[in-house]
Length: 483
Image 1 (cartoon, rainbow, N blue to C red):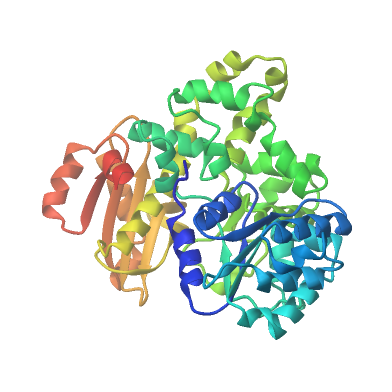
Image 2: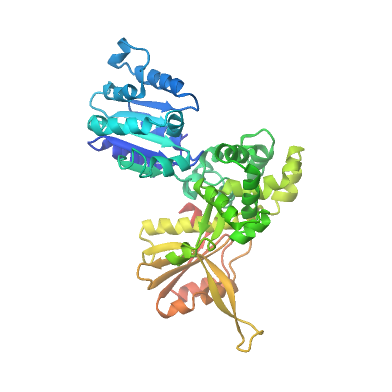
């Protein structure tokens, strides 16, 4: 069953229906669902779908020739293989699809280029002189992020500027991922998303008829299952020095967010080297570098600023619980690792993911024009706030603090402040007061709106506050998940 990807399919359909040829570049990290999305798109259309392999150029050409000739083009009567890539690509014009677009998808295009680095030049020449006027839709798809972004889409590449559409596929958001588990409770949908994230390949490994506990044991912790070796496989595919990357990722997964902290925890002496490893992980879509939503460009340009976190939920889960207990798992102690390592910590582990889900909820509300204003920026906020204390003469002290959600209008005259609590007890009134105390200086020139999100409801005093305060909105777990 194909789930989600409505935006991607709509984009491809729109390009397909346009009355001109299309050269589309579609890319994204491994396992994100590119191939399945493309197969869904072309399912009811005449097409050629060619999956490149890591093989010699001659073997690649022979396989591509066979795919094209299978479409019963005229050249099939005379040849069994094209002598070169130029004539192979030119033959796309002859596909017998009548008035419909001649749809050709080349999956894992980087493999083709690795075998023959002249292929972009050949395609560029043919596109400029012939193919762009032949009612063709050519889709070049790839998983190698460095090649697609730094080579194919770079100004130095012959195909630069020829693409009529460029689409980077990201992991699914929560609301699409939750469709894989329609019978799970709202809480369990949050938990499973915190474990697997939005990668369709990972989501497909879990059986929605089993509990989360059974799925974790059977499909992550048990040696031999697909997800048990997934992280190691992906790192070996994409990176060298995997032991070093293991240390860096583990440090981030276990809570180190600043460059110096990550260097110390991963035992790398040079922060410059650590920065390079983190940059590579960012390119793979495993790590993000996060700044406060109100950070200036100058701050973002400072290599030493910003916080690092894992954007891939499954990597975060594996390094927190699987990698940390690898010896026991190799010994087959699945029950012990789950009972003593995962079960007591899973709910708290999911709290960070809950914040991500709440931000996604806010973005969906903006699409519906259901917010009190349209924000121009949305994200987490990090800063300092003044709190009462007894250790200074003034009775005040400054402490670092953060907000889970902050939306800022274009002119910075309206602020949307959000706090998220994923815990088994209600959102406390004292926690609400703490939220109100933040961003005090900004209140002088901006109107504040508050959104509180809670797994387990709200203190009665907060509920009473809603009747008196029109700028305060409360959202339960069901409100958030069922959207």
